[in-house]
Image (cartoon, rainbow, N blue to C red):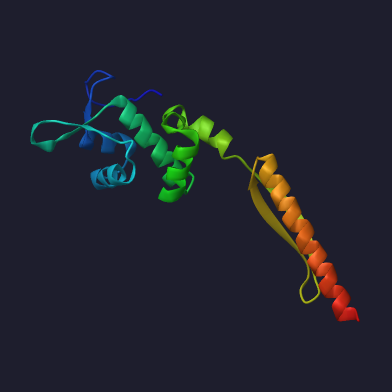
Length: 155
């Protein structure tokens, strides 16, 4: 991941919170809040407590921003993703790899309701065979339950 700045510093130089906030189009207080929420963000501290971010920290912040603002994840969901996939997943090419990991499939399902007629609903599920089997099992159970309810009503 390359980090580009408008300043005349070397690409691998440490950045202040103001420079990082400008680059990521965030307010400094947002970055400070994320520091409190994500233990992986550990800027170096200079004299007087001023924060200096390494390029790796900035890349991690960019990945967190992608998940929180771009993918509308909650902080809890981002933390779970970091636990499952690791910090490197967030740091390395966030837009491409995260998009692949988070790719969703919409399944179209026709359901007949006596009181409203036929309705189409869409269910999102991750590209995971385990999730697909779980959803299919749930749908089969619901269909059996619906058939039993219809049979009782017709008696």
